[in-house]
Length: 456
Image (cartoon, rainbow, N blue to C red; front, side, top):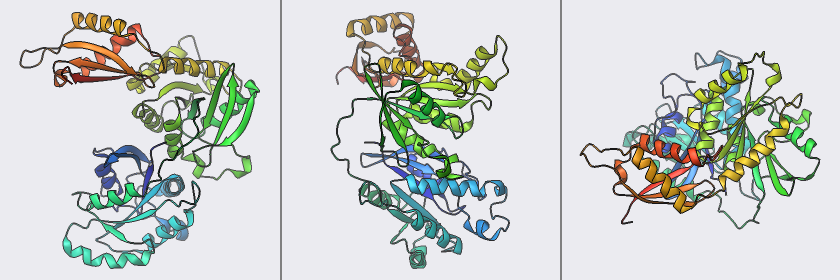
């Protein structure tokens, strides 16, 4: 079952990014006192009491500017107000739970009430009769005296307020206890042994067009079936004797049914699709090149330990010479330097150029994902790697690898028994990974190296 998704919403400058950083345990969101700083949704994984979930930080909703036409409160974000609202609306509809942040210092405001109304309007039943809960989080409650002011927030009609200080962490434990208790319980589901390929990428790169082209060429669609991803559709087809499920994060809709604005921000759908997939097709617009959002999605693919093929679409629109493809490849390798192992395809969905290479490459990557290395071959490789380079710790003692074995596939995971794991610098782990890939490429697939003391 995919990890639950928690969305942080609220008007500008109530501390969403600060709480986001608190929940994920690292500084990823830009934190600034200027309202409207967070314009793009950010996402990361978090964990509480052994339960993992994903957190999504949205831009601040400023409803008053939309209804009155006044200048927005968030100076510098005027061009982004509508887009930020669209992001947040999508987050509300896609999330398994919503943390609605308000400011404990300023108290309840008319803007908070409008956000509360927006939240209630977008609440819908999912997964049967379950309605994703909304938690009212009163931030900036740094002093006990401010707790007496919580009664003011009952007027929002959301329910019991949770007082917290995102900057100091106080109160977040009680909030997280209630949050993880609200997550849907995973039930028994029928085993689906098809190879799941997710088509992901920023809006308007051609995801749905690629899906339709692939399905049209195969001409063996079984049925469009509702997927776990809300408002999306899984498409089942046969490629030779292999059952494949294509997951389109944009969903298959009639042209008139597409909601303006909401379709433009699809990171949450990408997150859900990637969690369910074996292989992700990361689509990039050849004319625009790699953007920050492309890198965000690529990072989530890596964080989820999924395999990936980079698909550069609209290649027909790029002016080319003999070196263009290589130069473009080098730029992608530079921009996605944490994914040096990925294959890159240059296609045109519109003309059909090289589209017939997409599924075969994805299936080849899936084969790599489930392949195994024999223990003898792995240990021979590790011995050669140590002969070539053994790191020396600051005490003069060197890291020694006694034995290694592949403990699982999907993704390929190797357990290495060593004298002292703390002696292994990340650069040496990277060196070992590169040595493994020289003999066993694992095209498009991340590999895990886990070091343990030999006595364990």
